[in-house]
Length: 205
Image (cartoon, rainbow, N blue to C red; front, side, top):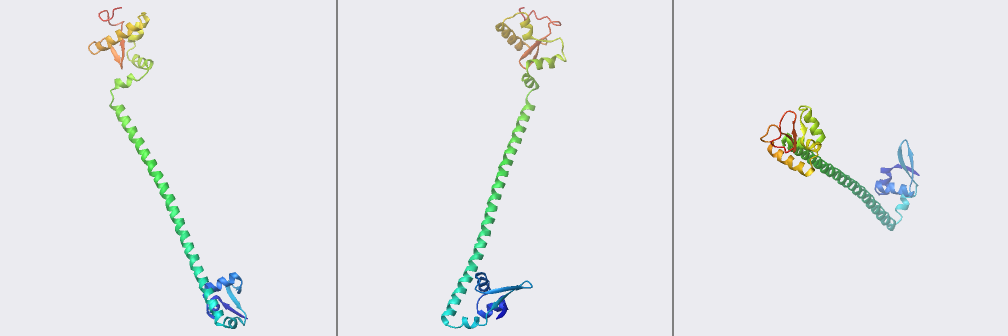
């Protein structure tokens, strides 16, 4: 019985180290581990048995060939699996990058749209902006500075003027407001100061 290293056993049996490892895994060879080193235990008649006939040698060579090919194929499979994982990771990263790029495009578009809206808002005359305010807010804002002015619509309503006539009077005074300093307009609403001014020449009431 001999105790040989993997290299020594491969040389003695005329096979590769991979073949020795395969035989150990198949338990056709006995092995022991001493001080962290694996040794192969060969029986004394092992070499003689290996050289009994040319047929046995040919069988061993064929077995070794298959074992070597199997080892190469195993390494190839591991390499392909690694490449597949790498390609899968690259594909996933591409999807993530594309998603982020599209999200950034939408964010940029939103910012551009907000900038355009803000530019339009700033470009509009203040009169148009005030016209969008509710009647109560517009009136209150104006009354802070001119407490004696009153909405023409309210003034006509208090005097029982019909809605149809009221609209006509408001329209006429709105057109005259450009040339008549007694009439104040905010948006499309008219304001008058009946305590300070006489409107008998333009109001039939």
